[in-house]
Image 1 (cartoon, helix red, strand yellow):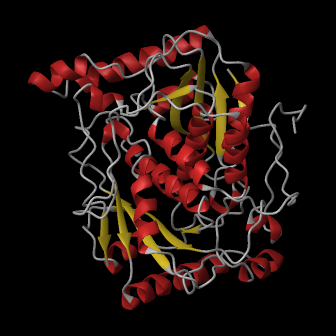
Image 2 (cartoon, rainbow over the protein chains, first blue to last red):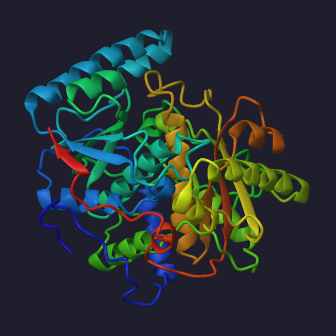
Length: 228
Length: 228
């Protein structure tokens, strides 16, 4: 399935087998995958193999995309100078965010670990082409933001696939999009979606780090579903 | 795990077991889940049980959300009048979209099946509260759009979970958000993300319907990953 040209996989589209059945054991494991996913900020320094990184990005491409536009663009950042520029932007944005809180909340914010930029072995940035030719505009005339939603689903695909290998992903959003576009030298019309730290997590837990740190709790299930 | 008050599940947050291991058999089935997901437009009329619908929405809440803000809001639409209003909006938007194409492309567009509004037994609309108190603003000061990305990931969670039960989901985006907010009588500040048709699919395939219909093909894997 490996693709020499692009180093990413090509997935077969012809049904080579009958539709798969998913049994209750699979569903139980899938629920565990969702429960134990986590937004990771503390990484071990062990490398993640290039082969696995390419496999994860290949799988991300199986996400739904509006009009089959596949608008996502993945950038792998190896350059220390570019990583430093991203980190500098994070520090400025985070200082600014901290200044918007006061009292105990500010104290608490200052102690949160909100990125794994220093330790994560793999850095990926995700952008979208906001108006790709591919897809011929289908499905996004009234909702052009669906290209960004497609990328969010590609990221989540990669995130879950990573977790099946016990690899963690942390989505950093405390960044200014225009500065990241410039720091990574991508086309100016691309829209920045996410900066992902990828690596083996230092800890594993079924509860969100922000919940464990006392910043916020999941809310009660009632209230998410309303009837009309 | 069932929650009587909200009819949605509450997930345990305390580690009741060691971190799960995912073996190669699970990973192979997970890949099949991604490959066979599909954006479904042709549904059988068989009902989907209320219990399963609630289970799927409960699982959607395990998606990542910026600052643990859980900004997603699910609306289940049973009212024939509201369903008709949504359908009317789709027809107007789709006629408008058709008029933007010409020649063979217009002919092809006119023959695409882009929604399952008439046959899908379950209709769900997804919105976000664009500036929820929950999460205390963390992670979205420079990128407020991350609340919408959180909802996209919740939708994708539901979508994959549905597929493990052989239930299909079709995301309809050929709608005008302000009209859907009005038609479904939700708070005016909520942002419309998606209208989902949910039901048992009339057909199953590992290739996208738009690909089978000749509208668009997946592109070559090269080009999605660039190095910096």
